[in-house]
Image 1 (cartoon, rainbow, N blue to C red):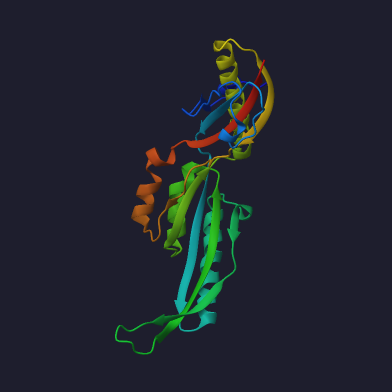
Image 2 (image 1 turned 120 degrees about the horizontal axis):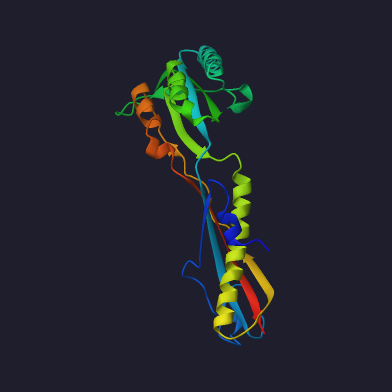
Length: 252
């Protein structure tokens, strides 16, 4: 059986487990209608385990929109393609591989200027845009990467989100630690009540959001990019992986 203490020894990670103030010690012979989770018609107790793993981010994903406005749609598309090609070349100089760049298709649409007095809209030109996602595995290069993007005339750095490459593994550890936490609480309560903990009767999994919310930028110039990228207090924010589970145990 995995325990919370075992997870806490994980290098560079910390795990906090608690009852969240929602632990319920079910009275003996309590009615099952009082709970959403299934309970037996005999002495039992319900516990809710919680676990949280925090880890420093080791990667970032930059979401970028490359745009161009031209009198003709073909010219707008060609300019976007030219900017994207130059962007790929520029990022390659930093060691960013093409496999770490996701590029969507070019979308073009007419761009109209609308008058306040209700006149017929005037066609300004054609807007072309292409969404690009760049995965960066060396956070020390974040500032340079942002500036390289801006040097290619790309002003739409929409957001930067941080993550862990082993995020799935950490989510699984949080889930198992939550189960261990629920059992640990049940053992403590049953012992304090002078009863022997029986078998697990039911488990209700209650997944919670894990991760770090992305930071949205919108339009960004090189000065803002440099200031934001060098803000270590933001870049080094830990990512939280939390999970919780509700368990029903019989009492002997």
